Length: 388
Ligand code: GLA
Image 1 (cartoon, rainbow, N blue to C red):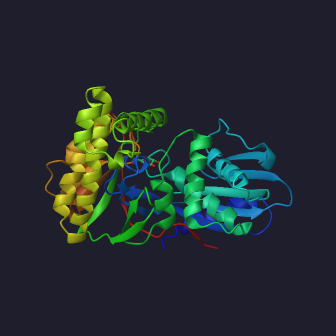
Image 2: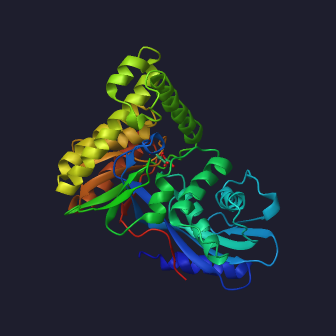
């Protein structure tokens, strides 16, 4: 497991500075997603993996009903009571409070607790720092209060916390990937049945390079909910003719042409992207199993184009970064990743070409978009665990 010792020490020290007692420390990672974007809440498949960047929480129970939090990243504290859980304008505490609230709603009866957090998942970059924090919190509270909650339920608790305390109707991918990640494997997750399969990530001389636009996806949450509603509208129109259909997973292109396109061309384009992406994931996963990275990479570029032009969740900076590598012989595939409107692109790049590529694109990004580019190599690691 990739433990960042520096952050582990820091979170432990922050805990000791603010609280008494010996905490339980949990690490929960961010994620990448190879292909299958905006498919999770449409009951489709996704292909994510947990990475070496993670959120760390140090938690210990209290004797009363208070919840006291300290964030090392923000240098801020927050205090409330178990009986008074509600979203706060401060932002970061919501992911923790939302989880505590879900535990109470699920009749799990957690007590009050002290919690310190820190991490190295860049916030707002599409690497799921929020899901990582929810999962770290859920895992830690499950441990210290002996709540006996299954890993799948902890993922759902994180997801519902995000719905209720952050107001974003996210799918299950991020929480699932954070909790169930396995070193050097991607997870082929069926978001309808929650059945999953670990597929070895054999990149043979290539690496996953993340290029961060450093555009925070603040616009993303309202647009995310709008996309979700648009997909639901498309399904409702198809359902009028096929009552058995409940999600875009079971909708075909013919159905879209017949029942959605005549009603609304914008909703048609949204649904078309999802229906095509569903297919790209399934064949892309076969490419990965066969070791045909080139074919997978071509699909990643097509995914980007669909997200940019039909689903319209990209932004000019993400498009710039994908276009900048499109004809580069060392880059097998690239696309925007996650909810969109900012954050990172995921690139599969020949190992020895990474340094020069980052330098070259960093310069042109700065010159043409006026922003700094940050680059990370993502290593695929294990999911959430208790580290001390
Ligand atoms: C965000 C959400 C996920 C998923 C992606 C898009 O990361 O949290 O559930 O919908 O966007 O694929």
